[in-house]
Image 1 (cartoon, one colour):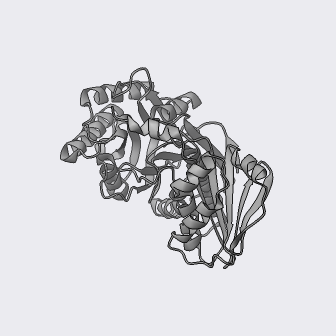
Image 2 (spheres, helix red, strand yellow):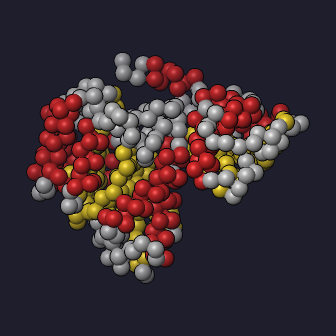
Image 3 (cartoon, helix red, strand yellow):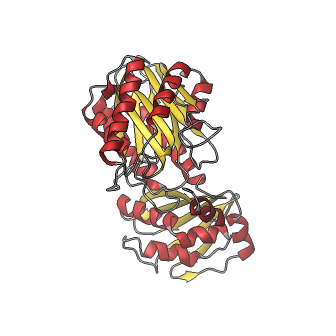
Length: 407
């Protein structure tokens, strides 16, 4: 497995584009297309928020029922959520227009939206944007980067990643673009993440791999505790690499799983580290847990704690906030028989052991907490299970960004 340059256009047969359509913003790209030269099998996970945006409803139906998909149209600025039947009509109209220009049925076109909840999409600008995207799409790395930039909202950096692995002597590529900075507390997948691969793999095998992997990647991040109405992870496979079909339980399937995991984990960490106003990526590793489920619950509780996030921002080694978050997680453990440490800058410092705080050096702890990446290690001393979650610090800028996000 090797990391390569690029994103969704890295696999064979995938094209992309990002253009300025004037949906909400001025002087920035706000619509994207991902297009495959061959039909794709698709797998996906979506928000478990009861309030589901129209694109989520549209895409979930297509992933479950459509015989193939071949294109994705995404807009930023307006989420098309809380829009009822009119929102679904906008999805259908967008898919129909893209299908007409690409020579595809509407049920082969997925759609995505992100932005403010409530307003309807300006369909005149959407239709014009679709036409411009179809004209601009290309297989170049630059086209993939433009698509990655076009799906950003409050993101400070675009997020794309690609890897290659060998399947039956054939090179298979997986590439992704993602967006997310705020309203991040997934319970299924992520904000918006699109993964493309040229692997030959069945829909059933791909779906099983995606649903399993999301539990240890996108489901293990949190920025602010808010699960979006639009969270979507889509994985498209067009089979153009020509490898022997990836079958469950084989070494080839394991190789593909590892590559997919690297893509998803990398993108998930980038989302967490680019949280609105964030200055640090916070990683919590829970080891020695009795079950995998409890390890995940404990790790997510720590990185979701606003008090702990604020302490990291203030470079304050307040380990009591970590202990508290572990305690209210819902997982059972013995606080008199466990350890909490900080790691960073090539150093490790033990803060808490077997019911008592240690005589650690505050200056050394502050130095660790001042790094752009901070690791919290909680050893539960109950078993052998481990889980990792990612979040970020909570800063003054988070409130500034969200205090006037709509107006």
